[in-house]
Length: 342
Image (cartoon, one colour):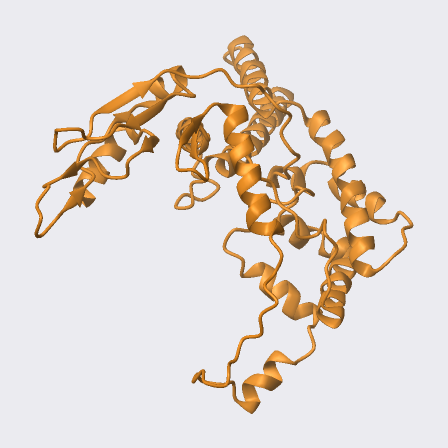
């Protein structure tokens, strides 16, 4: 299997997202019954760019021992505005820290958690504007590259110091644009085994398409076991499922735990659990987060944002965390997340 994966990687091929049965073959034996996923569909970047919203359906076997595979062409989707997300390249944009400092200096009231949420909302509004000022990072790369190529084409065989300095400035602008594009694509591609600096943006572009195709919700199973298709139908099923799961009243039956035999924490462990939550402990936890680049909440910011702005946002962040541990309550907006289909 490892050789097969390496073959796909070297060939630039990715698995097509599938809907339907999990396995594609069975030996149909009464004894020693085996299920396998033997049949697959793989495609290259050209296919994913052409059929961005297509999907591979694994049909029922019928009288055969293999499941037929059917690729269905894209369905029409209604476009919705995407929530704000903080991208790490914004940290290096001139004026970023001044913007955060301005947003964090507003006067607000309520508990530390409420104040923290209010400042984050105000910060998001200003970051949206900063993002618009930066412009389209892909267009910025093309523009910077075109300007540099035009300048180098116009150069004569002899260079003076001013021309050399001007060329260095244009190269610096192109490198900045490339870094911003790479940071953006790295987050969208969800590639964890590559690090920023690999400078393979064409690969990131392809992974973005693959990731988008795999995560597009095209079919869901409702509570009656029926498959539903289409954007609005899938949204209704998802909302109904989450409402039933999260909105159901908790059981009030008392549970007798006297007969449960399990290990208990020691006095030393108990003292650690009851220890005060310090600022250093909070930021050590943030630094150890494996997915510091992800921002699933409505505020759109990630762990890298708080690490880069600790001298501005640190006091409010730590006060909010300590408030939760001291009072055991959390405002509804702090623990919210998004359910996205892309």
